[in-house]
Image (tube, rainbow, N blue to C red; front, side):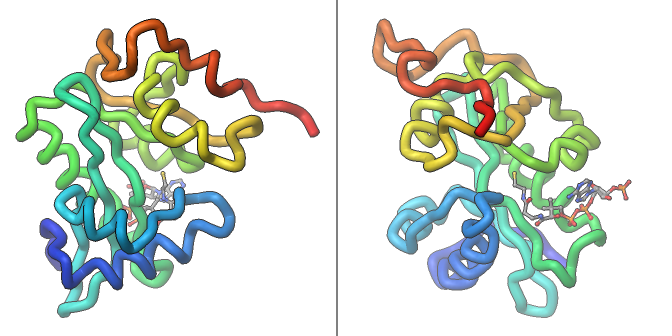
Length: 174
Ligand SMILES: CC(C)(COP(=O)(O)OP(=O)(O)OC[C@H]1O[C@@H](n2cnc3c(N)ncnc32)[C@H](O)[C@@H]1OP(=O)(O)O)[C@@H](O)C(=O)NCCC(=O)NCCS
């Protein structure tokens, strides 16, 4: 088994892996165009030449990066591949001198066991601005924001922007 940086020929398999988890909202959809454009964000887990998992690190700046699109094929779960993928992405964050890595998830136990802690979404406005505005669940999000490192004091958003202007972040009852 190896975890390596993705290259463009992996894009099709990455697309299939992500697609399997977008219908139920576990992962945000990514088009092939986005996957290709962001291919350098991705790492893939490979066993005997088969890609069985992937994950990506999106860089906002030295103040923040985000782990996203992480998943492992059902039949390969429970073999620590998820841990290896997170570790590879954290290594990349370190290499880039990033001081905080965040993610939004429905599996906080998995990330909690890797040292991530829960955060208030207002502390991660770059992420909220990038994804939540266009997410169909933005008014009823059931994901937990988590981070490792030092919560950012900076944001790359325009001056005067407040996340609460854009998206209500508390879950609403239906
Ligand atoms: C989350 C996911 C990537 C974990 O991958 P994995 O290779 O099965 O996980 P690992 O084998 O590395 O598990 C490491 C530890 O986390 C625990 N864990 C794994 N998945 C878990 C889950 N869904 N809920 C709670 N704990 C979990 C394992 O039990 C293991 O604990 P242990 O060390 O005490 O045995 C995988 O379950 C997956 O692809 N899920 C669907 C997509 C998804 O939810 N991605 C996260 C989006 S933010």
